[in-house]
Length: 287
Image 1 (cartoon, rainbow, N blue to C red):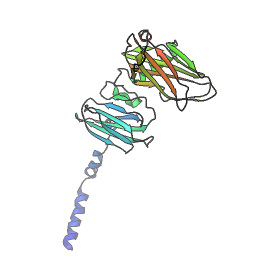
Image 2 (image 1 turned 90 degrees about the vertical axis):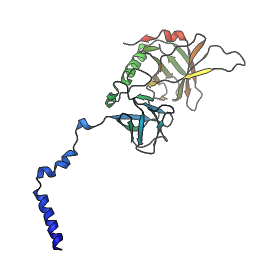
Image 3 (image 1 turned 180 degrees about the horizontal axis):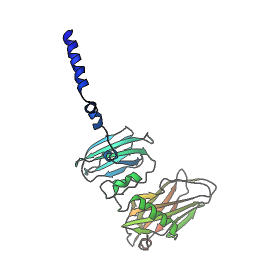
Image 4 (image 1 turned 180 degrees about the vertical axis):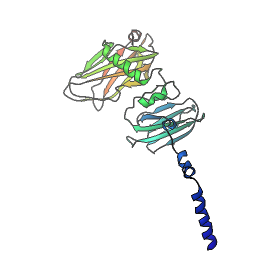
């Protein structure tokens, strides 16, 4: 018992002899400043669409904050991760990705039924500006913020490439816009009826102008890299909807045409527009 008491007393005396500054040094090592914080990227995903993240180096580690997220490397590409929601709606979560160069990427992930950004290039110059919610689309050299600005110009510019009306629904494609290998298709939809119109989806595809009888019709669907106001789906009675569908630059062979179809959800008020290559070649540029 005496030995134990002596050892305890010696230990207490030893601690007392340690200067206060030395005792608190360990706590100071845990302190950090704003400079130590890694940037966090906002990420919105859906259970209906797959989002692809492009990294400058091969991915070596992926951690998901909850079971509401599904992620995997893209087949044949070590630097691309595809992400999707397991189901419609989930509490805010996070995702962490480590690449072979030792860099750690942190994401705050939320559910969005129709996310605007489906391809995010983390290696593009300026992607660190994500603190302002701006993204660089991997298929376009234009930052998302500029895409929004050009889209507003396209909607305000007026003009008509094609228009069609049916069942008191009017659809007009404005003049095509062009900037840095990117095409902008402004779409104006007016619901002139007293019944709300719910947009199911808008489809773009290229097909032959004329299809011979007994010949299967060949159509090539093209997918936009970004949709301005893409989250808007409901058009009130006597209301309007304005969107801009943005694509990587393409042209149409002379014997083919571009078809734009607007489909009503749970209804039959569908409208089809037809554009030619001449409509693309007349595309106006933005300031």
